[in-house]
Image (cartoon, rainbow, N blue to C red; front, side, top):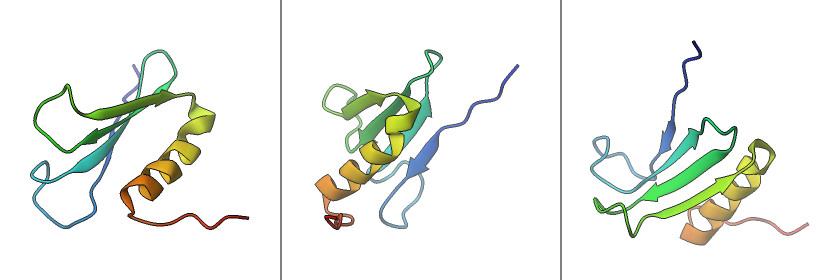
Length: 74
């Protein structure tokens, strides 16, 4: 049996799950879900599902959208 873990990333140093965070989760379908938890309600949370090769691009776009970092155009 494979053990699968989620990766949770938060911008500021607060107690786990007390502030906004990004959860990146492998799905049984082989795809990867990125879900931004900025509210306790599931409905308004932003979520994207991408193939494994799209994870880095999705992560970079997320960081850019929130202004956590800015991408440099080539």
